Amino acid sequence: MAIHDQNYVRYNGPLREGGGWWAITTMTLRLALSALRTKIILLLLWVMPLIMAVGIMIEYAVRGQAAQIAGQAAPGPGAALFFLQSTFFSLAILFIAAGCSVVSDDLRHRTFQLYFSRPLARWEYGLGKFLALFILGSFVSLVPALMLGPLRLSFFARTEFFNAMAVQTGLTLLMTTVCLAMLSAIVLGLSSLTRRTGYVVLSFIGVLLVPLILHAIVSIATGGADIAGLWSLPGNFMMISEILLNPEVRAEYMVPWWAPVLILLAVTGASVGALVRRIARLEGVA
Amino acid sequence: MLFDLDNVQKFYDRFQALSGITLKVDSASVGLLGPNGAGKSTLIKTLLGLLPITAGSAQVLGYRLPEDADKIRRATGYMPENDCYLPYMTAVQYVAFSGQLSGMPRREAFRRAHEVLYYVGLGEARYRKLSGFSTGMKQRVKLAQALVHGPKLVFLDEPTNGLDPRGRDEMLQLINDVKARGVHIVLSSHVLLDVEQVCDTVIMLNAGQLVHVGPISELKSGGERVLEVDTHNANDRLKKLLEDKGYRVQTEGLRLKVYLDDTHGDQDVLRIAVDADIQLRHFMPGELTLETAFLGMIGQHNAHTDHEASDAASESARAAV
Image 1 (cartoon, rainbow over the protein chains, first blue to last red):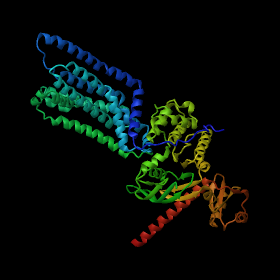
Image 2: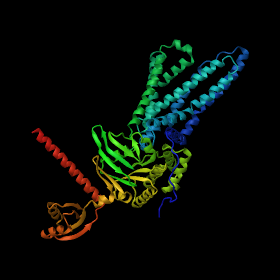
Image 3: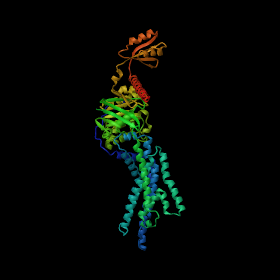
Image 4: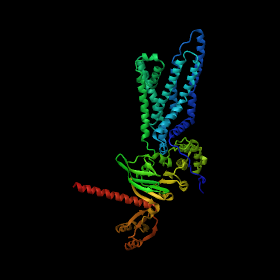
């Protein structure tokens, strides 16, 4: 007696061309979100944006009171810079907990054999994985930015600072996206270097932490000169953010504006290069 | 036409993995045979369009390589030899994902994943994580992912690996059922009995060269008959005597396999034994199995290759002198 279903009929429906990258994105994201660890980390990382939302409301109330006593002062970039800094570290924590296995697990479990025996191009695989990390990271970066930015903007809607605040909100959104894309690419590149997720986690922590220590040492040695910021990823990122959000600072900087941009581009480019090189060498069938 | 290969060559740097494979196959099921390093995996990769051909031309299911590689992969399924899944995926997720990668709409992929898992006998286990699957279940789920999008051709790489006899029978029964539903099968296996049970045609490779392509029945008959002989402590002596007279003889276990052609009959073997005063204990016509045919062919091919190599060496030595 056959153990298989005798009434089975072969699939004869349509098979669309392209779009495999989206299947990679959705499956990677679904698997990441199905882990309890990811859910807990996401919940914890939402504490900071919620505190910021409360802060914005308090800022609005205090400004309302202060305006009756003595005229309103223009809002500075401090809140936006604080948001960007916290976003950077939220993303780092999220990716350490849930993003580092994005390619290494495929290498470890040889799932490339499945992927590349299908009509899936190498670039589709890379794009799919990148988008999965980007969307996962957006839960603690872009989504809070899209929530807090317009909230803050709405409080300034009827004031003379609306235009300045709109520019500040736009730049914050832009830098949040840049930060997200950069960290996603770095994690993707590191993850493609080894089949051990533990090593990816360690190397990502190393990429963040070791330069930060150097940053601190150089900062102490130079008496807090802005050049110290060039030594670390968050240092470079915050330098660009400050230059964009606070034009007055730009004139005081010793470091040219393009230096941190170049450093971040080089790191991101190297990560993308590592990924491309790795997946180009995989043949798909063992 | 299932495969139409014309002088297909593949080099890895200087190493020639496939040397001038030319064949036309239009069979429902094809066995891919060859020792380790024969070029079977390279041929599969080439036919799936994963490796560019160094020279020659190839068509699979009427699609040309390399320009139609995507169409070929859409029309084929591949069941790899080793595990290739994320262990924390459920069976239904895995199979549906495979369908989506082949271009099925998401909803349809999930619906079909359920159906195909029932088909391979994993209906009850479809929501279980793959990490908890036994070897037999893993083989079945790999077959399911190869079938989910309704391919016209399925490459099966060692589908009975690690299965117990019952599991192996069930897997072969399943593969034969897939074949009966109009799906072409390419079975790459070291277990020749499996190939014999499933395939009509075999492609035999050795050291990157095509040794044989054709129906199994033709290979097994091969124009030769086989005689199984056993003697009273004189197998080695009889073997030498027969080989001196031009017979091809193989020792298999405690018996000798004597290959007979038009010039050598079984009575001649009997006469040689009697003349040498060798006591026969077993003298029966034997069956030429695919295994013996395969070993014979590979042996002949290796001898031929060695002979050509030594000819070339002596030729070059002569030229040097």
